[in-house]
Image (cartoon, rainbow, N blue to C red; front, side, top):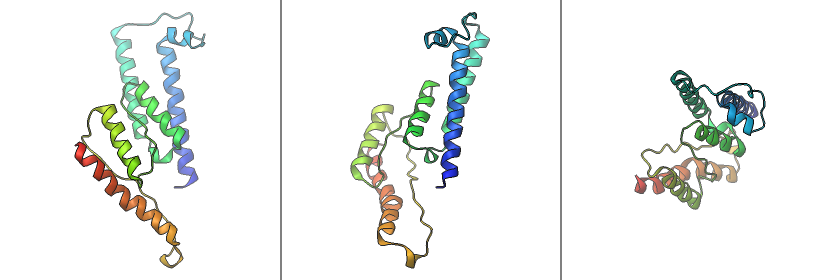
Length: 165
């Protein structure tokens, strides 16, 4: 993954989070005031059905936009932020750190998923690494890492997910 992709996903997430929080403060002046933002002190909250529908639509758009950001392009903090943003906007998400090539991490991921959501309906094991070099220039350690993530990681995921489906 290139640095540009990581920077792009992080910037996209940062802009989405800023827009979400600015929108939340605008819609809920009481919350804004409690959070120390005095810009909306002179406004009463509009509790009309239209305002409520507009806020629901804004939250749904935030969940959709945050869900569309590829977590592979984010570091650990970005992945946690993405999950928190989805949760704050009314969606459901969890970030669980781990290494797909380690059985205990896969088992913990499945347990955390079942604990958070009650069950597993679907799994998409798509972790993978690339290495661009001719075979005769590839070190054994790099080859082992590729096999561990791309092959063993998928097998371990299925091994722990299928019994919980």
